[in-house]
Image (cartoon, rainbow over all chains, first blue to last red):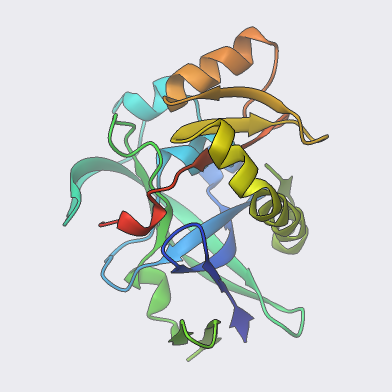
Amino acid sequence: MITGFFEPSRGPHPYVLGAVRVPLLTREQWVAIPFLIDTGAAQSCIHPLDSVRALGVSPARLTDTSGWPRVVPGGGVGGSASYFECPAQFGFVRTDGEIEVVTDVVWIGQLTTSNQALPSLLGWNVLQHFRMQLDAKAQIVTLERS
Amino acid sequence: MPTSVHPGSSLEEAARLRRFWHDNYEQLLRQYPEQFVAVTRSGEVAAADGDLVQLVEQLRESGMDPQADVAIEFITAQGDSLLL
């Protein structure tokens, strides 16, 4: 089982701390990112704050659409933006100390004035591999491999 | 922010950082509302700005790496109004 948390300064919204390896950006390194669990998101996204502070991507590179393997349009109720799709691995530590790894893609959000502070999202491309329990009243956030 | 060749160790450091932000959030909110705040490993505020790009510029002008030398968080009182 993987345990997450409700972030009191954000909502409260359900989060899980994940580690991500994006070979294009981090090579063999894993970097930690707090993901908002978003069952309405088709794809997992890393937004600019986490791209800068965790992945070490410069704002200039996040603005420029050239040099990325694939640029995809993304849209949600909060608006639309371009994303850079990259192969990635997502790692989560289980309560027994073992690591759950999901290999898929991650969308890196293009830097705009309106998405700088958005949290990164754990979307359905990763969530589909887990059973989830979200209970705000009891402060329970768990994911279990299905 | 932490990097590692193994996912587990990067998560341990991130959990420590999360506790730091949790413990200091109210004070930082009073001083730096709606701003990106960068703190050093000793917990001192290195830079703050309402714009992430400007914050990164400030850090670089001070010779600091935004990924390796500081932890950055957006300090807001509007966290419950998120629509994605």
